Length: 635
Image: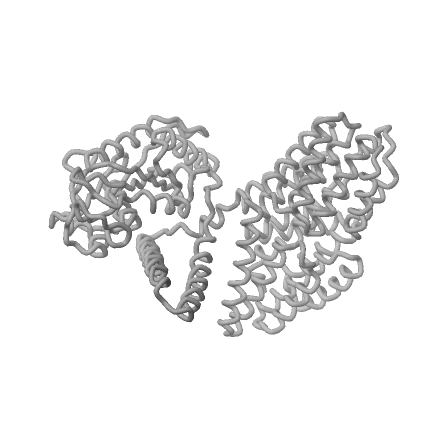
């Protein structure tokens, strides 16, 4: 019986192993260097994992005493930084990395010291949640290893970088490429390090390549047994037991948990307990799975291993759901997501794309649901403003009740909004949420006789899937970045330019009439078709749909927001126009312009724009002569 959610659980061990590699590894060239390291510096390195508080205290005392040579000062700063990271003191850890950087910049170091300092700084940043910084440090360590011809250090650095790509960024294929490179170097020197095969096996699990994972764990088992690496031996055995899922798998895992706890490998013991839990859940024993999850959580310290704790909570949620305890499962899942959001806010990861990806709707029906939800938020905000005006005339008891209501409402809105980040990690454009806030301020409160409004343009890359299929996802990313840069260059400083999801972009411009909107759409189309994309792609074309906000204003009125047809309605109408442009042959634009004062119901128009066009409530514009609205509106 297989383990269906194995890829999710495989993250448990990787961060600890990456840390162990960065901390424990001392390049061979460092051992050959003539410099004699301060004895307390060696002791600090020995203490940092077993007793990080004592290590940090020792490093602080020696640094405060002064008189240290720069190499010793570098080692003490690196030791204190990673010890603070292990203790959960993020600010102190980051300050320590800055001190290490300053020493490397200001003092030449003996051979091997820069490599060790960069490796430790990478581990520190990873523990502190700065994944981008950690990647940068490990890449610098890789370059230093290449300069010093330290092949073992190159292997270690490649494994660390691969772990970050797979663990934190979900870039599993890129991680596999790095693991393959590390294995090639390792095999060329006849080493056969177990750590390479073990972590490569975990990455294969995340890719759901179970047979490849099994083969790698078998290699890791043999290499660990040959090198007498007890921790990796136990971990590889646990993975193989779980993958084979034989009758004695749980008993074997129970034995390994005892060995791992005795050896001090609490992360490995927790991993094995979660493998037990998954086996129990696959066997239909959700109660036993919860007991195993609780055992795993009891092994994990509170201040670190947040990703691993999240995996344990995810398995607990699945077990509760399997028991039909839906309310508890929902609450556990909500807590897990709240913790994850807090961690992502602190980390400021480039991998915010994972959260953003969950907000990209694949169907127009989902887009409509989102727009209605946002209208509800706008209505709630308007209700709140009316209540505030009435507070001055109410009694003290009414004031208190309304304040409580306001507090509850604010928490509810905040929980919704904090799911969104500010920038798209790939294109650096505004994301959906940040763009929405800008669009709220852009929609005019009054429409003059010239009918100038805010206009929403949705831009979609033509044949994007074919680019990915033919040239690879790196070429697809290059196309997205090129289109993003072209849009920024082609738009004014007051425009809203955002990545709306997948290969779709949004541009918001204020003060355009219908003719100006068409001219702008064509200008954007031509600018993109004239840009060159790397990776063998050459050039791309786009299809554009646009609509105005407010959709149906009362001319000269002061109505705004939901009362006038706010920007989410215009986004959906622009999406309908974009779809028509796609059906009309691509590399063109289509605009839907709501006639001022039209009596049409906005929901009816969004569901069936063709009828509104026929009634004259919506005016059709197109980049190609003779364009006619499709008979069957797919929106």
